[in-house]
Every structure is written in structure tokens, then in C-alpha cells.
Image (cartoon, rainbow, N blue to C red; front, side, top):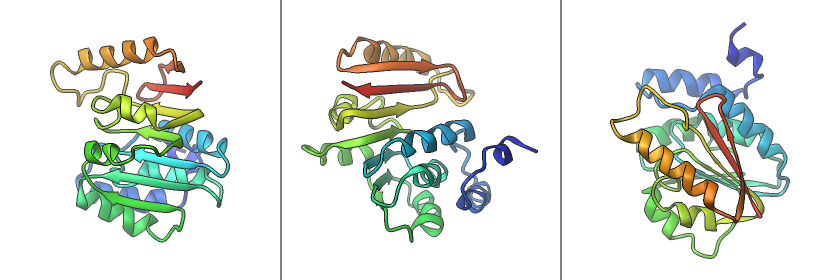
Length: 192
């Protein structure tokens, strides 16, 4: 039995995974991270969810699996091929809105909106426009990022960006922040 079997993954994951491999997409979220996202999503009934960096939809499938029927999720990515895979497998879900757009521009368009749960899995909302993303979180809402532990795919100098991000979040008095050395390295923050 592999990790994916033990996690009781959502039905759509196998098809998304197969299409991701066939398309050469190698930046999928860690299954343990996805499992945590589902659990956290289940703690937010009738909520508004935002995912920045959809990829091919693996994490999206897990978030949807944790959401109740009165919640909604907007997922954003700028890669049409990835969004195509996501849409093929998850597009019929009425709780889901799929947006193909630049993440920075999308974040700038959300002034005045608020979300109960934001998963930032791309530069937008994590390394760029972080304050804008944090400003979208409702009081009691969650801001989640991954890939905070060293990754083989990190470009030269990226470790310094990660350290700077962690220090910035630690100094932000508007959130309780927990850093987890688990999966790819998770930071979970709750807005006060």
C-alpha cells in the first residue's frame, strides 16, 4: 500500500495524476499537504476558498473533497494546459470557479473581498503581493503555504527568499503562525 492509498484520496486524483504525468507536469503538491488541505477545508463550513497556483488540480481536488456543499472555491493559474487538465476532471463541480490569469493581476483585482481559506502555492500571494493576499483573509481565516523546506527544484538563491518570507510572517502581529517541518514544509497562519 502506498502513501496515496493510505490517504483515502478523492476519486478525481487518479485521473488528474495520470494526465499530469502524461503532460510532463512535475510540480504537483505533496499528497500529505493535500490531505492536510482537505482536513482544514472541512473545518470551514459555508466558506469562501481561494487557491493561488492551481497546477493541474491535485490540491484543488483535495480542497473540494473537504468543502461542504454551501462553500465555494476560486482557483487561479496562468498555465492554460494545466487549467485544461483541472477543468476536465473538476470543472463540473458547481462550487468551483476556474480562472486562467496572472496571479499578481488577479490578486490586485480582489480589493475589498475576503476569504476564509487561502492556499498560496505559487509566487503570487507568497513571494509577490503577500500583503494583498494576507489582507484578503477574514478574521479566523486560514492562510496556508507549502514548499518551505529545501526542495531539489529551488533555483539558486531561493533559500534566502524562503527565510525572508518566514521572518516576515513571524513578525506579522495580525496572525498566529505555525511552521511545520512536515511534507514539503507547511506554514499555517490564522488571522486574528
